[in-house]
Image 1 (cartoon, rainbow over the protein chains, first blue to last red):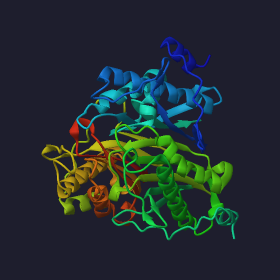
Image 2: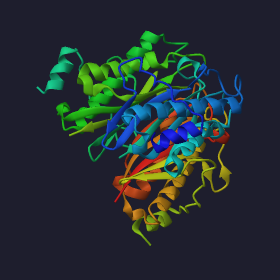
Image 3: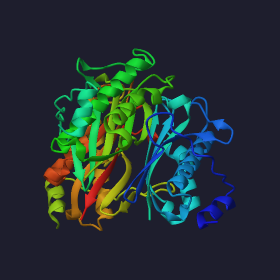
Image 4: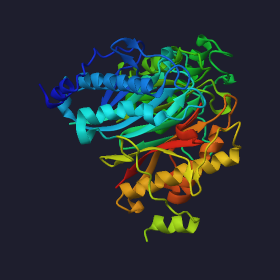
Length: 153
Length: 153
Length: 153
């Protein structure tokens, strides 16, 4: 097992089969040493986590949804790395979109569900630039969507 | 005619004059072999396609709006490539924003209007990473806005 | 003083201490000659500029909020450049998110507050690709959030 696979096992994280895109786009694109991963919605072990922060879901549930997005990003990343996550040298940027009401202000706490996962899995190279913003709605009523840019060797 | 110009003609797509930015920004920036193109709104042959998905426009109209955004991206790209779209080696990433209500869930179907265009025009290298999210409103009430990152040789 | 520091002084812009991230992410990531800066919210000299465009704030106030985001981006950039802003060779891309109502259409005018600042400070290399979209809400009810990608030597 690679170092990162061992870390995932220690954390009790089982990577899902990465979701196939449902249209004319790709789950990820590799250009030079950068990997651009498509927006991953909050599909967890029990299916899609849906609903709006500030109305249907509390912050803790939002954190779980963002955690699920992060796990899905790592699953795509593993495929992009031909199965070897030890090739990852840096999590560069996460773009976090929170399905929320117009009076919801805790986007950063929600997106921490993705950010904390990256640092738990990758350590210091898991620290990344990010944006956390609101959306009035997301695909299939997903609670959270996160895309990402990663560097590999 | 370049290969891609021929393909555009076969598809019946006439590239517009690329829209000039209305402020202190640029329609595109070239850095190394990457081109970052500014968000293109849904201006089609008959003018700006406006309105909100889930209220004013149906999904098919949204697809047409996203198609228009894609055509505008290609028009900017052609200028960035000094007129030679055969220099494009990869559509890397599209960021799709849908002007929609809070109970609209079909962002992916809408943004397919841009994604399908890229693959129709560029073939396999047209497949790209993407994000598709909602916005409560967009500039000038545009129905869709899409920005993009492309690789050229 | 560097050329850009002199320009900032001429413009009467005092860079704040760059805001520390409040979670497991970084204010910026350097990868090769690119710097990705995390979304900066509209914190000005008098604190966070809050509220929704189209309801609580007018366009001029939105411009001021976007200007504040731009100043915060430059403050982070200066730290990323070890204090020497003359190393900046290009402002590549700004991603502007406006906290607004569903009938607000002037996102470009608002985000000009960031764009104009970049050109005022960096001149021609300050011109950049950008996207300007709406959000139903932003962190801590910030009026504007802007992230950025910059090139340095």
